[in-house]
Length: 211
Image (cartoon, rainbow, N blue to C red; front, side, top):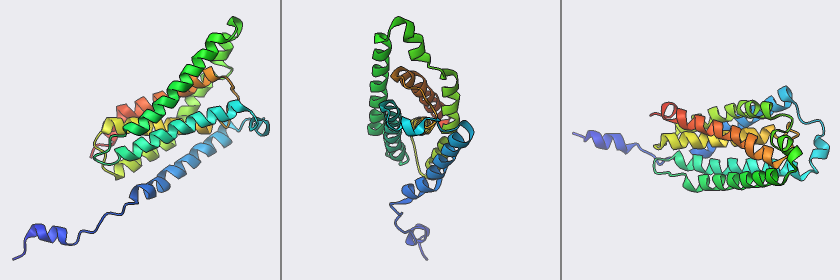
């Protein structure tokens, strides 16, 4: 008579070390494409794009959001495993966000008093946050799908990392449309939108990622 436990494990094969990479390619890249098409086709690329490519402000804005997204992606992938902590990636993202915030506050402090409102609000503060959130939603959904296919155990933190990644990715895509140049605008409105998506992920993580 065979042991039922032996029967269960006899046919087990090693799990491929690449499923997470495949899941990311399957879900996150198409989601980024959707977000990009949303910005390009619905909002529109900034009309001065050829000239914008020579502006440091354009590259600082894009690089900051990509750096935050990269740190969050490291955390997201780490937290997809039962033993993952995600700390290192989150530290990278928080460090970048903190540097941007500090730079933005310095720019606001040294700006002439009659220009501080413009430095803070720009001309599109009321459009920036909802557009970044809208651009982030496809990436957030894809990130949740990736996590659900894996085995996260720190569900609130994993949701936060998914939201942080999605928010920063959405902000990076939105920068293709945004003509704001102020570091203060980037620090407050871009990062505020990213934080909203991250907190949304933390709030919904335990429900969306429950086994």
